[in-house]
Image (cartoon, rainbow, N blue to C red; front, side, top):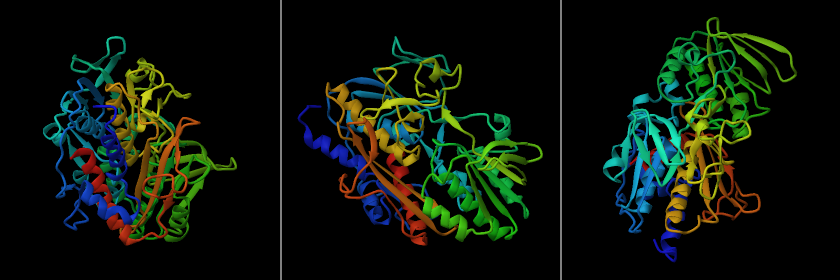
Amino acid sequence: MKSDNNNTLKSRRRLMLLATAALGAGLVPSLGRLAFADSDGDDDDNHYEESANTSFTLANTGLNAKIVVVGGGMAGATLAKYLRLWGGSGVAVTLVEPNASYTSNIMSNLVLSGSRSLSTLGYSYGSLAAKFGVTVKQAFVTGIDKTAKAVLLSDGTRLAYDRLVLAPGVEFMNAYGLTQGDYAGTTPHAWQAGPQTAELARQLAGMSNGTFVMTIPKAPYRCPPGPYERACIVADYLKTYRGAASKVIVLDENASIQAERETFTTAFGVTHAGVVQYEAGVTGIAIDPVTKVVSYLDAVGTPRTINAQVVNPIPPHRATGSSAGGWLAGAELNNSADGRWCVVDVLSYESTAVPGIHVIGDAASCGLPKAGHVANQEAKICADAIVRLLAGQQPDPAPVANSACYSPITASTASWLTAVYQYDAVNRKMVVAANGGNPLGAVPTASATVSNKNYKNMSTWFNTLMGDSFA
């Protein structure tokens, strides 16, 4: 790639924004033309469908390199795809992922109410391999040899790399007196879509007129609107199928609602009034996994006790492998102050602790929300930076990222939230863009209303996003 190839670089930056920038309902039609969307009008079918404009050509860069990507979630899958697209055929990309397929966390709350099934949230790595030439290796990482630049895998193999990208996601910490076994059984957190999601749905379906208690950990945590969205979905389900005597009690360790504050304040106090009881600033949460008794201190320190029928604790989490003795910790990559996250340079997502290793997605400490749409954006910024670095250039000095999500409030209505972030060179971090400070001319905003139209557009946004990452 030549350093004066400005058209390629400009189009690449624009693609990073436009390919997945669902800024409310207004951009949804454009998304379908740009990438992949649900074009048959079937809102229940969340699998992406190819639009007319799906042709692609690997860039002719002349670059040669071995890139290993660890983790096949939203961040890792997107990065593997775009490294091949932008890096060209000489950039060999190996994706290491222990699971044969990916189950989307986005939309998984709808499994609890029966609006979707887990099977519709599954995505394979077939297109990444067949269309883009990504080598997919099903294995666990057991260690990183930083000196030899090699990744050690559970099957005993070693993968040499020129650059390593880590997108391992999160692991969940033991909290509230619970163990990993409790999360897998009696008190599922279901904050990673899969068997726990199905178990929580089963427990919810078995409720009578009882109390559903969920906890929210101190930020940062995965998907800031997610817990409040879940509370709304569960409340709507209980009102519809179990009667108004049921309760959803939300125990938030944060001082206030962390995302879409006005929307969820109205949802809790008006839409689901009398069903949702929201308490912020709680401490000292303890849960008995057998009796389902939940004790805690309220915001003023008064002891409280709840006899719950279903308990859904969302525990604090950290980057996968960052626990004592973990492979990420062994490589000294979990260098945030609390040891839970990996601090990165947001121009390239290169670790500030270990040169040549990049960290993206939920595991990174970069100031952006830990959400699937953001992971897709981080992956593109990182892929762009790696291609430039391989060509002897510097990363883009002014990256721009978009954050967008929809939040279902009832079985047929939703809200949306979006923000554009740009690089602050003074503080060396990504910040919310000022008015007019981004190519799309948008400002951080939320939907003015909760509507059925938003609910329908949510499927198009989701299909487009997943298609951009996995198709």
